[in-house]
Length: 143
Image 1 (cartoon, rainbow, N blue to C red):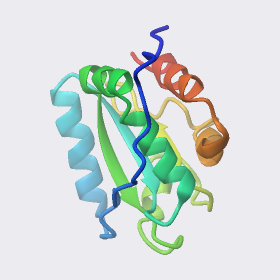
Image 2 (tube, rainbow, N blue to C red):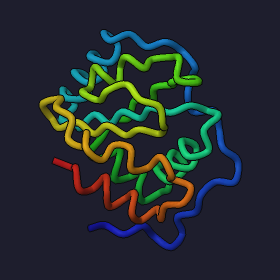
Image 3 (cartoon, one colour):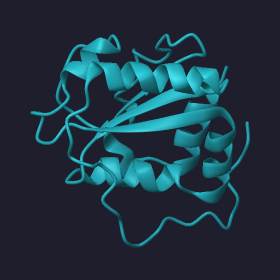
Image 4 (spheres, rainbow, N blue to C red):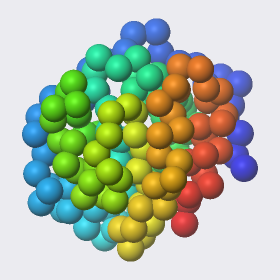
């Protein structure tokens, strides 16, 4: 496993990461297809700007070592769920019954098949998680 560098620091100000727009199933499918063409794995994040765990998870994904790893192997799509009233059907489209609780991380293989349906809710408590644990989790699903 790759380890985070000691200079990886989380930012002190969290940006608005989720664009609060409805996303069509066609847009999700196009994202997956385009990512596969690049020979990278799709990584879909369901979250919202109001959610501190979604913000924390995204900050961890933005740590320099993690960011380089992600750029090499994955393409990320952020999907805003609002207050569980927006884009919830896209969870089901990826094989996850629509449920509350974010962030949800869905990692797909190079064929577009979800790899982590059983553990996708693991980072709903990202604020209480060790960044290295999250990094190792994502590395486990790199194909």
